[in-house]
Length: 172
Figure (cartoon, rainbow, N blue to C red):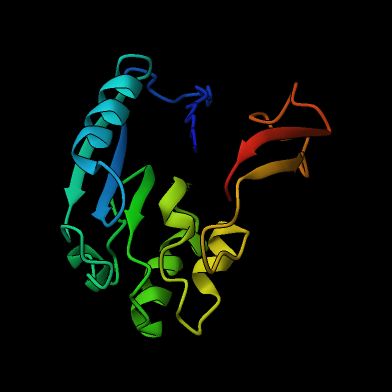
């Protein structure tokens, strides 16, 4: 069905200590997927290839209406270099709560959004989460070929990618 590949590209910043790990937060849980195994595959696999220190927050069981507790803190992303969202909470519609999640990323904290995160918060009337995603999804689509477009080819992580390519037989 859906395969998400996460690649952390080492960036050398003059004067930076390359032995210091990236501090990553993985937020996971909700309905529809095997988060118990995904959290191990993701964190162990990435840490085997890059210097990343993980905090894992798994909540909500299979409840799509669960509000992840850390998001109630206005500075929830403080201290992390990157947030990996692997959550599925489509039923949460509290706009102020969702805006607080998105604010961390709007203010510059990088994020990686994995599959079901695209479907999270989809019934809310705010667009702030969708702005973080760069896409709108209100349901699983039919499996189809998805044409991808490289909109920022000069960015270091996108160098070498083609202008367009097709992700065959996938779902958004």
